[in-house]
Image (cartoon, rainbow, N blue to C red; front, side):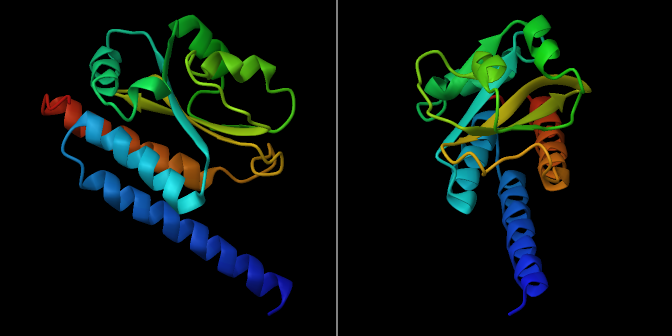
Length: 176
């Protein structure tokens, strides 16, 4: 197998993994299940050791924060921060941020009661009812796992699916 075929095979596998996660999200019945499924699927599909959630503390995010805190699986993997700090980090809007150097500015996203040894991160913002309310964050001890020059289109597509499903679930008032 030549290098081009190998890259195509890897890309196909990655895209298939994202599609599998999107399909799982469609099956969820409430906000708690949505994030539990997201975390479990990302960890399993991509062998990611660290996945957590950061939420901006706003009126719109309150039901999501409440649902996440109600989960034994998720409650220790949540950090709630001021909206101003969230906007400062995600100034580019819905574009995921990938870093593998100078991670210190992003430590503010980590849950205070969990310690992660990460050398690279992918932080993926999502929205609810048109407002960016949080990010799901992926970390790895391998520095090469996430790099700023990587394509983020599949992460963005999954974030759109997550946001759409979040709107659907919040609209039905099934919060947890």
